[in-house]
Structure formats: structure tokens, C-alpha cells
Image (cartoon, rainbow, N blue to C red; front, side):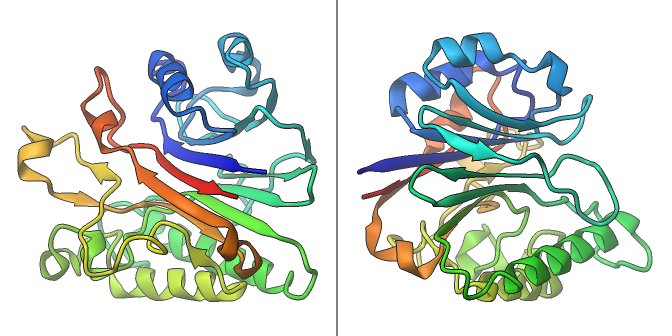
Length: 264
């Protein structure tokens, strides 16, 4: 059975509900994983989402910051959110579909502006977060479970995942230590980068464009921060990918755009 998964840092689900409904209508994902929902669970806008057909929901939210959600047209089992680094800051939910496939939705810490864990607690938190989840996945080796990992991982790992490799080597999201730790996370279960599975590493590819740019499209100084990975047993089912760049130009857009992957 075909499955379309979307991941999107929506940057406030209530503020951008019309855009979420547009994504649902135009792209028809089976599962939508959101980051930065920025709303407590008791204020989450269930009604319009369920009316659109996404009746199965797994959420973990807090006021004004962070927050993740999985919205699905297909049933799943949800055991509650997982917390990392001794913080309950709503950065990870996972569900198990009826066929046994586990879907993990992450919002990895951005890391602040200074790429030095001694000088910047936010960057130290990011590095610890990456190490913790890597260790957790390594502990799951050999359990035979098919998995999908999606989310705003806040790291653009490859040279052509950023507009300028040389200029961004000292900028948080593309520093060598972050790229190295993301590589270790990817190696934990042999994760396959579902988007780069279709797009050569030599091709520029972005999913985020800063609000600071006066004309984001003309300058095109983007980064690929949003990812979809699958375990090797799902790699043969990969059918297509879409980074929905036009969504960056939608009215009141998020600075991230949806990333969609189809599996057969």
C-alpha cells in the first residue's frame, strides 16, 4: 500500500492552520509530522484537522515554544512523548502504524548562534541531544522493526545542503561537529536519506530560507534542515520525494517548507 509522509516545521500550528489545510488538500499526505506547533495540548486545534480527515493524532506541546505532532488518516498506536536531556521540552513523538512501522518525529534543538558548547548552553544542549538519541537508536539494533525518522533536525549535513559551504562552516547548523554527530545518528540504524536517495549530492537542495532575507527567492540562500530517513528495509519501497519550495511563498509562510516522501 502506498504511503505519503510529510514533515513540516510549521512555526505555529494555530497561526498557520489555513496553510496546513492547504497542504492537506493539495498534497494529500497520509501522515503529517509537524514541528514547532507552539501550543499546549489542551489548546491544540483538533477540530479542523479531524474535519480534514486526520482523525488520528499524537501531540506533545508547550506554550509558545517547540512542540511536535503526528497527524494521520491511518490508525496508529501512541504511547506518549519521549523526553531527552532531562528536559520536558516536547521535541519527540513516535507512533507505530498497523503494519508495525514506527514513525519518529523530531525537533532537534537549533543550538543558538555560537558554535561552542563551553560558551553556549543551547549548542551544548543540541550536541547532547544528538548523542542521546543516537545511543537510543543504537540500542534498538537487531529488533527487526521498520522505522521512519523525520523532522526538523536543524542540521544541513552536505556541502550542497547549504548555499555556501565555505561561508557556513562556522555557522550553527553546518559546523563539522554537528555534521559529524548527525552522521553518527544516521549510522546508528543505517538510516537512508530518503530525499537524497533521489537527488544527487552534487545538486543544491534546501528546505529553509531565513525570514531575514528581503527577497528569499531571489537570494536563494537556503539550507536543508528538514529530513526524512528510513531504515534499510524500507529503502526499496521509496518511490518519490518533494520539497515543496512554493510553500515558502504562501501568505504568512513558515520559514521552512514541507518535505514529502512517497513509499510503496
